[in-house]
Length: 277
Image (cartoon, rainbow, N blue to C red; front, side, top):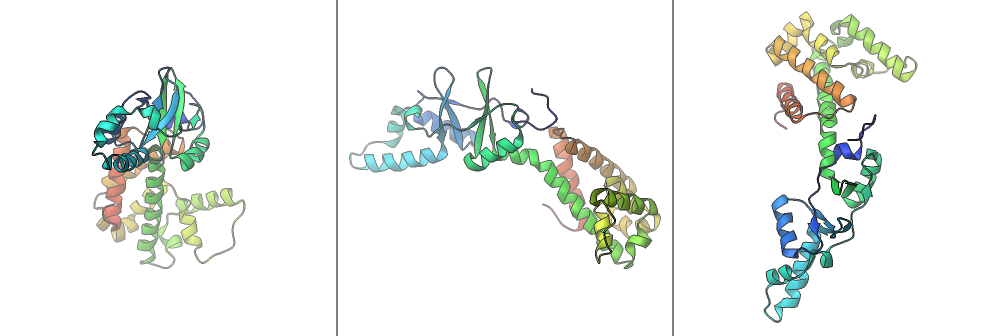
């Protein structure tokens, strides 16, 4: 696999891509699409070169055309599909990218073509679909949703106790860290705004959220009734910080880590009163 500082097509692709031979019967290719759930199959010739794409839309078109053609003489559509070859009925080939292509190049092609081929690599191909891109982006989206919802939940709960919740309910160390991060990002201290406290909360990280939640008065007055167990919150927010670091540094999460992230987001949303996703 190509080693780069960014995500590449090879890291995102499904490989090997399931292909169909150009000389295969159309009926066989229809069965592969039906069995696999794919919306398209790369079509290769005897040399392994991609010569076309057999798509679900081709199947619909063929059934309509053959149904019209055979209606007059009472012929059978399945028999005709078994007689015709995929290479005769397929659409144009999918675009191809190198294994080390960046995701910006991949996304631009998937937006237009809905899939791209990666390779060839030792006479095999990879494929990237919109589903593959969603799989890669899922951890970013889940973590982003969780952080936004967690910040909103903290602000909502603490503002119910006092309008000066930032000054009175946020630990001093957290206040200073967030203020420093804000200045580092914006370049200068912004003018006072009505939502300044909420905007400062946006500069928190999971360790800061944990410190806010576990602050003695915050825990006893608000968060103990929400989360129940300090250990539960500690372990999950620390695990989420590890997952966030991995995602931020473009390390693909394992299946177990993705399941863990799913479960944690689900559990926190229930605590927030958001119910199941």
